[in-house]
Image (cartoon, rainbow over the protein chains, first blue to last red):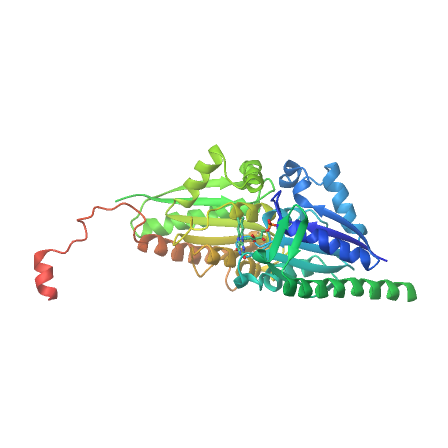
Length: 183
Length: 205
Ligand SMILES: Cc1cc2nc3c(=O)[nH]c(=O)nc-3n(C[C@H](O)[C@H](O)[C@H](O)COP(=O)(O)O)c2cc1C
């Protein structure tokens, strides 16, 4: 069992990204992991922009990152990249703040033209933070997500592909935990 | 002759900020290069940290309020934009990206843009090309070929000796001044100014 922190970089209160993350967190729990969901927009905005890592809530999330073995980094695509909100928080992590961690990058976006943002924007940034293993990510088109009062529905084909990426992340964490135990 | 208006956006956090220093050098080079092309210019510089709270509010609510709307109009309505960010984790800062996030999709369409970034090590120079430039490509801005990265050693003169910082700044300023000079439709012009004379029309047929 590993600790997983699920970061969402959407500034929206009706975020489709967050809705999907609810489902994914459930899936990860079924794999036997402990999961905490952390929408960055809930942090005090003023502390975030002032790069004030002394703020209590900001401090707590930075510590949650340092304790987790797995991090799911999700963001809507804005202007062909992750959001400024996500980056504002990641900027507060210590240098190499993802050292030793397994990371799953996820994006939602309005156009398939931006699928490569996962590999050209997310991945280099995660590597430069020292992530040990950035597993294959996924880009989910926003129109394939339907959020209603009964919950969230994802297009069946996309959901299958998304879940296989999530399952891989879950098993990578199990393998890592077994390896750590053995050595 | 109309004066060209240059807007400068600096996302530096430190005081003093090397990002601001680079922004100032770039705007000075631009003004000088424009003067060499017989164009006068004015420069207005915006420190993003001064408007950071408004930017975050705009991000969370989805639209810029009051003063910020005016500031954004001044920035995107200039004849050219110089945008400089510090590099964190081999990319633009969160504040810089938040600013870009709240720009209207078509607000920099065709606008000449000069990009700069500061960082500790010259090993991260390419972040300008791989992280910053694509944002402005997406916005259809007219980004000049030379963007300027300044590493810590560049300021003390111990940086790149073959192509030192002042030379890179000058080259970028020259390219940027050319784009500003050549930009069509940037200013409301006299509609009759470019109408050829009869003499010329007869000659051209
Ligand atoms: C300011 C803004 C910029 C956007 N830019 C892009 C973009 O460049 N590429 C893209 O594929 N989608 C873009 N979108 C669409 C969102 O990425 C997409 O709707 C996403 O699913 C929203 O996620 P959320 O509901 O979790 O915030 C943009 C949306 C906004 C509000």
